[in-house]
Length: 267
Image (tube, rainbow, N blue to C red; front, side, top):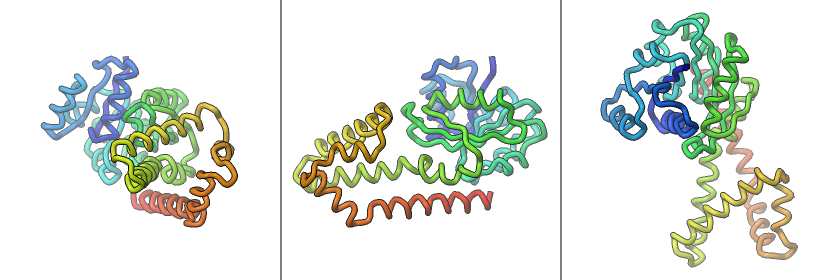
């Protein structure tokens, strides 16, 4: 049985861990690398998983999931590099850290896979986009995909598209949380209680998302189906258009993409 180590126990690392456990991975096939004693104790108690330091986790595992902040990836790889061995797989979940950077900080023969995940992985509805390095074989890519599939959907793309991916799905949940926040505030402004405004907004966003995914119908068509000429929805959409909602999304995603490019250049 292959063993997977998750180095970094923040929100994303724990999301992957929880997803793997939820998908039926045996606890003895998982190990977490975490240096903070309080956090290590919390994870061990909550998930029943073994928590050790990064070096011991590296020695035990066949696959390493690097789930630390982008600025901490290189220091972590420097810490464990002497303990890596050819044939191991390193999967990085850090935004903006390129395949070239990863490969330059591991020994020859270690395969690397760069992944752009997002936070809905915490509830099994994540979107992960992955790209393999020079030594990543089809077997490595299949293994990474199977691991990530425990947290949601997975797509393989060339690395040159990763900055755009970061802008859409990596940062995307924050955009929708902002929309939800605005919708809830609007409901309260219109006289609804905060609890009711929240329930209406959250279920509406969820239902609309499921419709998009399950029907396969284009977003523009679904929008038109809700919009009766001269009706309430048409009145609302006209305001969105007049306030430049589409342009704001374009500008925002371009800014996110550009920042991803900057992070990659500095990695």
